[in-house]
Length: 288
Image (cartoon, rainbow, N blue to C red; front, side, top):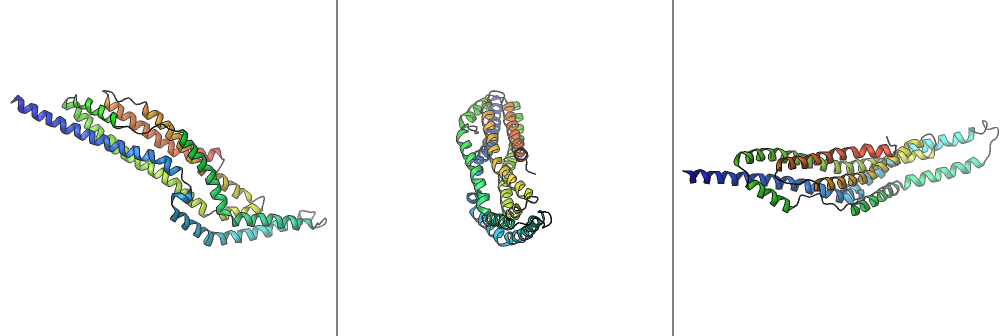
């Protein structure tokens, strides 16, 4: 009778250990893949991230938004010419050089509108260069490796059925939570790139305002927003570097549950920090 009970106990232990290890391996794999993929995705320019989407956005911007920007620029250019003429004591001290000044400013504004996409992509090229350099410096691994899982399995096999069942339930909860966090990480990283595409699609309109000192605040704020989006990738890499240091400090000892909750806590912290990168970057560049 005792042998039968022992066999049933061993079978239950094997089943629980197998279920726990399945939960842990799946949990770590999903998070490791998403976090490890951050550097690759953030380091891409809008043109290389999705060439098909980039081409679509560029065609729409040039065929739909640029004509609207042209009309706005025409109004601003006429308004600027009137301002230049009446600024000199209501034509009492009129000078012909103001026309050359207006022609020069108009020429520069037309060049800006014509090369809108080249300028916006140059901003992101500079920002992505900084991101790639930071990715080369941040060398810490964010993965929980196979040797750690083997150590955890040996610890689990030495435990009784009661504690194993408690570990199984908590590991299932942690697994579901970590899957949800990995989805959130995916949404943050890809959502940033979608925001970049949306911003670049309207680029000709703010660029059309540079011809006038008063209205140029729109274009200046737009450029600050582009810089904030570009350097948000740098802040994301900083978050990943901090996460890599923290995750390697977790020691998987006999207190497996506390270690698991520690890993999940650091992952929650990573997600929270990733959410904050956008607002921090905008505040640094004074974009609104």
